[in-house]
Image 1 (cartoon, rainbow over the protein chains, first blue to last red):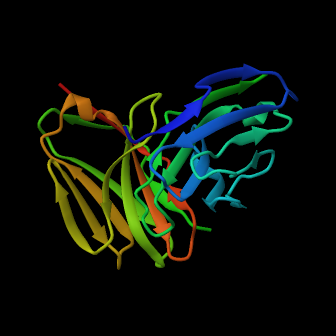
Image 2: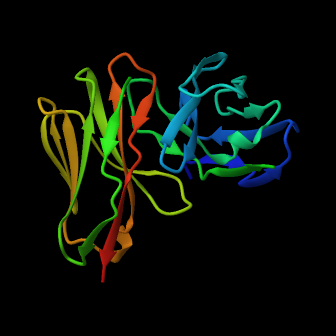
Length: 113
Length: 111
């Protein structure tokens, strides 16, 4: 089954404790993104990657890191989480920049205390 | 600043009626337009995309694009209670690597 998976689905952590949210897709998509979704603000892009070893900042990159060592995986890293990073996070993938039918993972609900 | 505007709703329609959802965007350089449906607590699900001016129909859904007026709409015919969700409009701008999303319109279909 073609899909985007994320883990964990739910996470409660404390300020400053490094965490990683994994994302994997099995569709051989080149383009992957991370979004956060907050009430009243909609979906905002954090980082994106156009291919292996190619990543760039989206609209709200502060406090986040990503890596793209393999085509299928695009982990999101919070080196020192803060309460304002409490949010619902989605990973997404699509074939490439020009084919914009984008598929989302199930989401990770993160709470930073 | 690229902006995508949607009325947040809630929009309530009776079962069997036509639901009309609207979206405006700020940049004339936009080239592709998407409608996503998002159930509460779930991820967005792509239901329609449209690239050219005019109408595009898929089952009970019709997307309408008017680039001159910079709006895109989604019509849902014969609305069902299962259509109750938040509908997100997304726009891709020429030369951009990002999809810009509106904040969504919450639709409730009343049985």
